Length: 322
Image 1 (spheres, rainbow, N blue to C red):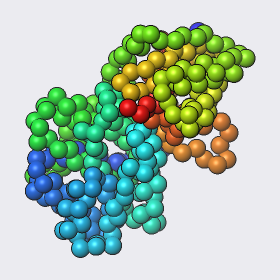
Image 2 (tube, rainbow, N blue to C red; image 1 turned 30 degrees about the vertical axis):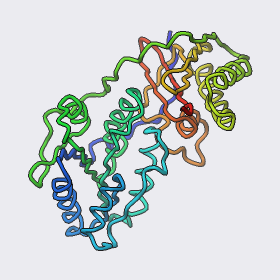
Image 3 (cartoon, rainbow, N blue to C red; image 1 turned 180 degrees about the vertical axis):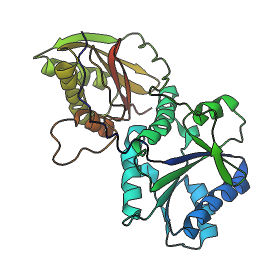
């Protein structure tokens, strides 16, 4: 029988609150400006604030058109680091800082898709876009526009991203997106198999020291800088502890390297029902529930797959300098 990881209780009174999440495919700087400026001017006319998180070249274009408009704030997404698992908390902080009382806030967030380091990173970026609908579903005072540079005409990439946005902006207005993925479960890509050679270790109660030693040695051999090993050790301890406590008391650890990345994977028979676990900042008075949050802060990427019938897999990625 599988064990269920703890989750936050739902709040049915707020499940239906609207959050406008729009995809804006554009081609070229002129289309980028027309769509984003239209979105911004709609906000300004309604007395709303705007938070802009776009690549530096696009930010320069917008700054040149806005003449230091005080209601528009530009933020640097690189401060959140490379892990998409940190972005929900970052957006929550940025939007709350600009909201005063019941003042509505609009966000413009363009992900640097072409800077994705590998297929796993690209997959987690798309998952983040889908999770925004869950994270902000109760935030009726927030809305977000996601520009996407479609100039390379990669229809499959655009279709995959479109499934994560309930609305799409065309000709200066938003419409319902028929391609939006509805339902409770996100269709993850299948995790790739470990590269040979990989190390494997079964663990249970009392094995935390052995797990840390194994991962530390394997990570060092793979080229993870010594200064990052303590961070990895903390993340590994948190994930292994969760696995033992909530995943049936035992599990399997595997480690390997691929494309300048060191990976360690934890598998157990538990189930995590809360898709937002690790994505939102824990409350100061909260007891427990910090393990996956810490892993997201300390690692370059975290992949989580969890189903009732197959259990839970958590993969921690640490970049290795070339």
